[in-house]
Length: 145
Image 1 (cartoon, helix red, strand yellow):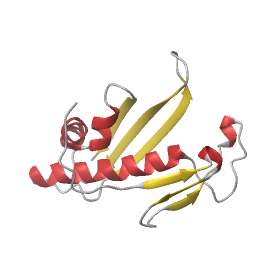
Image 2 (tube, helix red, strand yellow):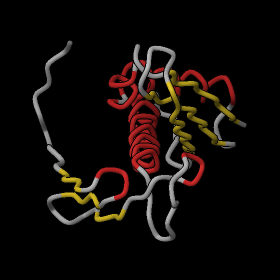
Image 3 (cartoon, one colour):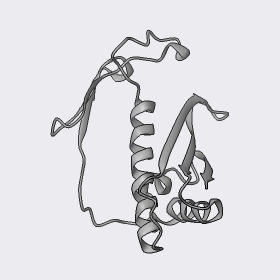
Image 4 (cartoon, one colour):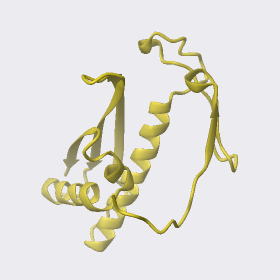
């Protein structure tokens, strides 16, 4: 496992698990949680799930990684849209696991170039991609111009 030199640390606290509340210690995020209806829960209005939070974070982080690589390669990818779908379900080995589908779309960048940039962002830059590698099935779809 690689060690890091922390540049920033985000801290959050959850109480009540999937039917509780979670918030960042600095107040930047504060959300009520409920189990999704598809998982047998109430799916209460105005709430979210840990999977939604993970999807939002991964999409934003991956977009930043793509922009970083784009700037290095002198390609403007700032207009790219990253859609991240996070699924949860029973694992073959017991318990629950996640699966992720990332879709990168940018019609202003040729398909082959965008695919190469997205792959490099996934393999070399994005910390969410590093954290999930070898543990979570992450599928990458790229739609360029």
